[in-house]
Image 1 (cartoon, rainbow over the protein chains, first blue to last red):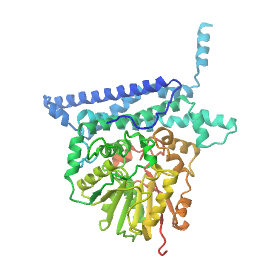
Image 2: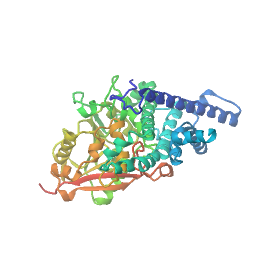
Image 3: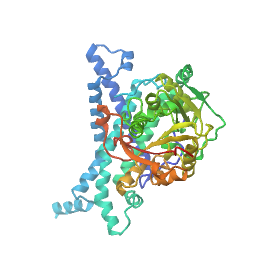
Image 4: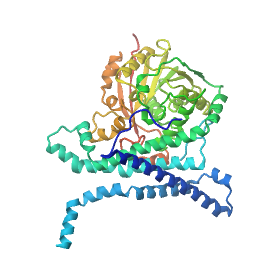
Length: 110
Length: 387
């Protein structure tokens, strides 16, 4: 089955390679999250039973509390990865530019 | 919060559930934490620049300027990527169990009916690009009795709406039913038609709300209809599915008392939408009602809000999304023969009142946040009682 939808993909950045790097990065980000949940599942089952069974792990469905904890973890995780995007706005709000940094360089070296 | 596991919903392994869960959280994070920054950038940089230049403030002039903003570009690229990750996750899951899904879909034949038409031409507006980036669109088949596109769509709608459309993705149908009950309290349709039904997730609320009525549902995609038929049976609903184009169906004149659609209109074309209205006029009995559920029109919205809602037009393979949301819908209905005073347009509340759905809403109308606002838009008209 095809993984590509018919229709040209928009180009978002000045350098189209950056579009691909972002997609690659997000795929890795997603897979780390998948890995983390698998580990979390092992830990929770091991803690409750002192025994880890593969089939049990595969069937595991978190209860409401565990699901909420996972959701919370994922939000924090995504927030960490996307920190740089939010930093842009914070930097703008603080009135920072490359120019203000040059001023700081001059200030301390002057 | 989880999707109801009816008999043909793809089963998920641990990693598949985690992959889908990740996409839901990512989409919600983008909608609630990253997307609001676009307004900050707009107000701080773009609006003053447009004002200084003396430019008209429209969603188009805003778009032109926002495309230069690194923050907007990054959000937009992430949004597109989240959509691709969603389809990748569901495609992988469906592909590995397709044999079982085909078998399960064939096992159910007791209720309703399924009529396919392999000769039906695929409309150009579906062949041009794969709508909302679903690989293969609604129609592609890779094997006999294929149901893959339906299985992918059912699961992806749940992820796309982040579970806020209910356990069976029933929100749009249920919300429109509530409006119809309120607006036409004594209305008892004998036959109902749902146009562009996809997997029938919006059709079933009508079968439940009007148990005496004969319910029909049409779509151009065969894999959608095979899946929809099996899905309806598993959910105990009797629906007659047939492969037809809403522009020209084979039903007799005046056959239906109620004709509905859900996010169908924006997936057609300028020409097709007029044909569909004329066909509805032909199919409705005197006093019959048409009701289409969509996302609100751009009219009356701020230019910035319209710009944000217009993201799908350029970034999610929804080429008719923007033009449709700009249309004069009264004129459209009139053009097909409906009386101006019978036309209704309303913003209605979501029928899903669960704590999980409420908690997940952002209460904003914006691209990439489907079902996040807690409201839908209904549009329709009532046919004259006598010719």
